[in-house]
Image (cartoon, rainbow, N blue to C red; front, side, top):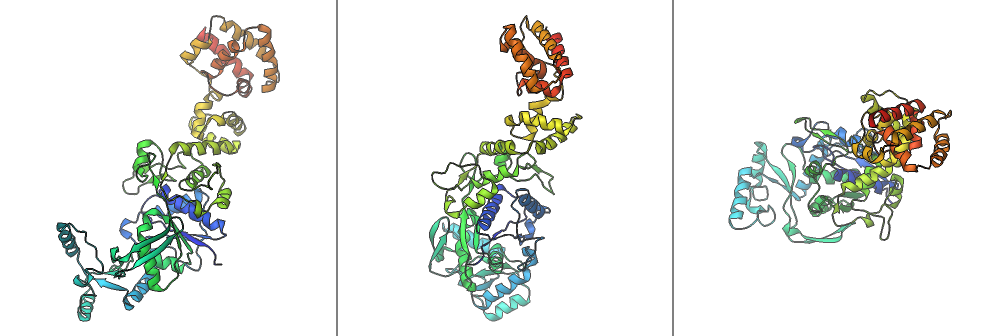
Length: 506
């Protein structure tokens, strides 16, 4: 059995949308599941839409997501180069083969001529299609004499080369996700394959490259399904064996209506790109999952469920990349569109943040603290992270959850103070401070062993002590275990904060 070879073939026309990233992921999963090769090919035939930096962005995004390609730009193998702009001579050769065999033809129609034809058809309530029913009446090499064609070519008359679609055939096709499909070829137009500027269109370049690169499975977005008939006809015209095709469902807006766009993300406050993107011309900045604080494993887990699940009855939602490779199959990819859920993405992020190593998170948090001119140690920040991360979704949440570990409160939540600070609270806090001052080994367990029995002896109720104590240490009714806070900030700081609260709230 031939080695499975799949490809991800984006155009460098801007940042990589998460729909494209999901296509890359599904290709990667399929390749690794079958011990195959995952290839990156840059489809830059449309030089007018080429955007500086887009190719580097695509590669960086794949690497950030831990789904690197096996072959592609910078990882050359014997089927390169992997940029279509560097393969122009190949396309010219295969286009000429189709011309020689009568499977393609020159079309010299000017834009004005084509516009007039469309207008004439519209006036009659019809749609203009350039194909079998009118091609012998148009300005092309099928309708012109050989002498006229040679003359036009000799005088550099602008032209395109069109594929000669079959006139009347019921074309049977198969999609690995959607099953059997039939198309009547008389409804197809004669697509342009090659332009006089020496560049092929997507359709020709795509087929030639997939064949020469030995692609066995083409896994791509649903928007390419209408092109399947043409692509299969091109394989047949070249007498090549076609790969298997699978068209992935659309990623829909959170409302479920329409394709997810950047505008949806801007409006609802979530990224639609893996990495932050700055447009080189307009300097407009688009948010990215990485810069917004998401972990790559959370993004990958989220994307996997946009159109796939392990099978009926499976309730498993958390998958490592290795588990996804083992579980993935095209049979369980949905035909219908997958609704994007930004809150579910946060749920995945929250889960993976909890699994992340505390010291790794602490290093990230340290950079935030440094921006706030707070000097501390990695070991202390690691301890803080351990106490607060279960309530966090992003590292950027840490400051709000833990600022009191680094700065004493200067004000107190008025609602909390009204609830927690009573007439006798100052006296209770003064006595508690005396008790805390006697503890020599100021650690969580030791503090508990002293304070809890003391509260019982006083017969004043746990809440009457712990609520105002939390207010004194934190400034609000939030935060992790109070004994952990006392231990972390130390005896001197604990006593200082209690004294400040007594002075301000008495």
